[in-house]
Length: 241
Image 1 (spheres, rainbow, N blue to C red):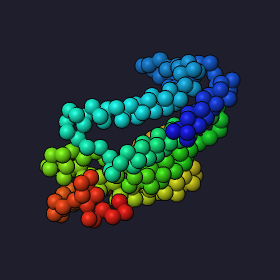
Image 2: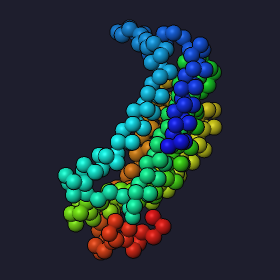
Image 3: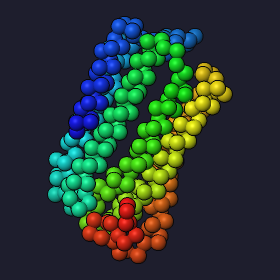
Image 4: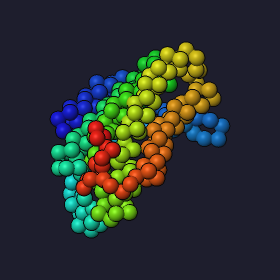
């Protein structure tokens, strides 16, 4: 939680530092023949990411209470062997998401302060490290997946938890690929126009690829599983998971 608090404070500090450099009214979309320009107050631009960080942190902090309610209502069992792994996964998620929001906060502040930075390479440079770190954290997150007591539902959820390991590898590989693509995006891709939009959209959609890997891994595990797995779904083939 300390890391998350530091990152949230850093977001507020970025907003305070950038306040005088950002226009009081920011144009987020230029006017066209059939539409007016979209203008947003400065305080909205500079408070959006800190507010999102506070909301996400608050929602995740409510997770333990929500778990207890769901356990009673739907006969679920949460976590791995104890609350330690669950809390660790929560802390990892909060730090990673807060770090991403801080990076985006800095990028947005620079853009609306008219800093001469190329948008697409900057986005790739922010998204790449986030995906690498998220991929590294995926196994720990998978260990905290909740497992129902129902045998049928338990088998499916266990297979999905197992898929976090290959999904994490794919996520990290994608992040590295985006980082490698930063120089090419800076030199080869126009910073405006259809080509930049196409490449940016492709980069955003590529984030779905690791989840496709996880879905395929889940199906393969379900087809090959012998039904023997531990009390919390840490079966014999999940060592090091």
